[in-house]
Length: 190
Image (cartoon, rainbow, N blue to C red; front, side, top):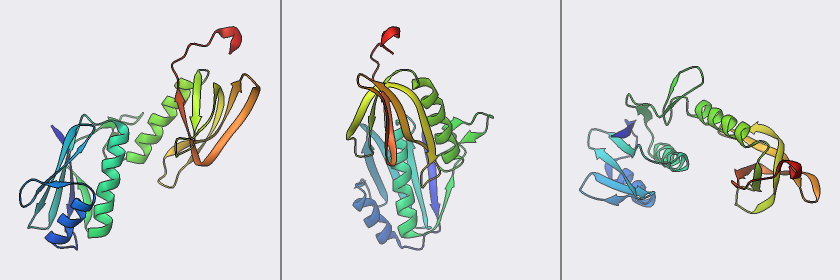
């Protein structure tokens, strides 16, 4: 089973679209079939002569791989024109039960997931990075501030950590990445 996303009525012709796919790393399988592997899973695209580009996205991809696939589809759409539409599938739900897809309610779903994750890691030992994965610090996450990024996704803009040296505030532009280490912290040290 796969998630199916269409680009309907692109302005670009068949050859421009297939060249775009190859620029993005897709490999040609047949005249109009292309494949792209991410996380050792195949994702395919069919470029039809009737002016429809159909992406079949493996449903076993991680969230970051889904974000990569989404960006690739947006890139093709922005460069080839057309309208993105989705088949009747869903990859998750919002808190109110609304279904989400790669384009349908995506920003709200990602924000919902991030908020739940942020709440879960508060009070645990974390490492904090900038968006280039340069480590900024580590310690027990005491609090965090959130802001929307340019895509409308809620991210941690800054956080307060309890470290061996005391309490510090870390921030980076456009946001920080906070990852739980899984290390056990004794209550009297936290």
